[in-house]
Amino acid sequence: MTRSGGPQDSAPRKVLAMPRRLANRPGLFLVLGILGGLTLILGLSIWRVRDVSDLPDVGDPFDVAEAQRPLVVAEEDNAFILYEEAEAKLGKPPEQLQRAEFSALLWARMGPEVRSYLEQNRPALELWRSGTDRPDALYCQPGTASFNTSRRPVWDLWPLCKLALLEGDRLEAAGKLSEAWPWYPRRPQVQPPLRAAWLDHGASPRR
Image (cartoon, rainbow, N blue to C red; front, side, top):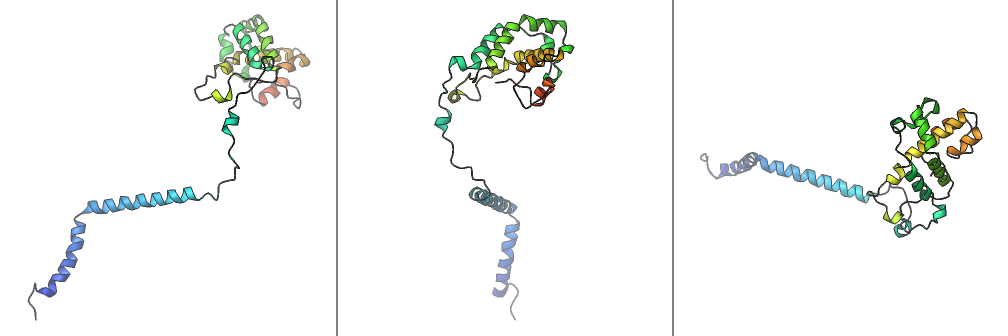
């Protein structure tokens, strides 16, 4: 027989002592868990980056330099030359015209102030319409365009677009369809009523 606490009992006690020391160090398990999670996330990320089998074939990338090359547009072909002249001639729009949505721009609903405004600014409106007959519209070169590029040259045209829609609606209501049609986008496949067809295709400038 051996006495208690002899050599035979010391080994089991040492084995039992190690788990106890680990149990007294919970921070170690937390660190191991975090490292394991990060390793798993990193492995999945690498796998997703390397696995491109589901991506469509988009072909060769486009030529950025070619896409940003300056466009040569003659002044007599550039609609924005006339747009700017028309906008410069335009007076301040009445509040009713400023607030009106495109779908609500009906000649019959407009008050005398808006009707008078259209007549007073008819030269500017005719100039704008002449611009829509030009083949190109360029106010900013592709190579200089950015998120900071001002969109004001386009936004300033909205009052003229609204007046054009009102003029078209006025002529259409008077039964002058052939005169009304040039004030709307040119879509030969669309039949009257012209105003409804124009709105169905989206209210936007013709250029």
